[in-house]
Length: 162
Figure 1 (cartoon, helix red, strand yellow):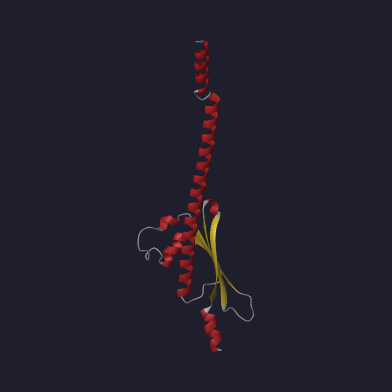
Figure 2 (tube, rainbow, N blue to C red):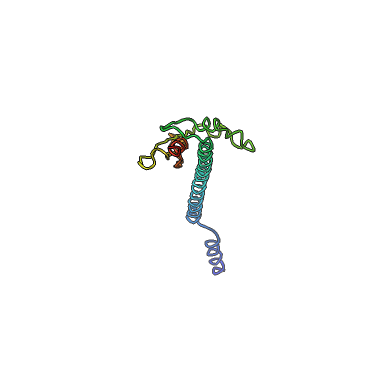
């Protein structure tokens, strides 16, 4: 009888988890979930940045293409304006097939267009450097810039006539 009593006491000791084991398991789960939530937040921020970069690249390319098709060189200098206003002037929102983008999409975004003549004597102002930068985010700390060299059609025609 004493032998069977000892085996019952031993089986009760080994049959469950101690408070320390449960505390360690819960702590490990907490660390794992915290890591997963942090990764999810990082992924969400990256997805938003990628979306903004894509929209900035498309808008910048549209403005540049619009400059090219006007067949007149942009004037030298620098101009900053809201991106939605620049796109509106260029007819961007009228050409969209759906209403997925609107001027509100670009609220708080600015575009800076900088045009310089190249200081190369043989070109004599026949080529212009056009730099378009789109800024967004708090304090406009995020940006996308495209640089393009555009032929000065009026200067090229007057040189050819000489």
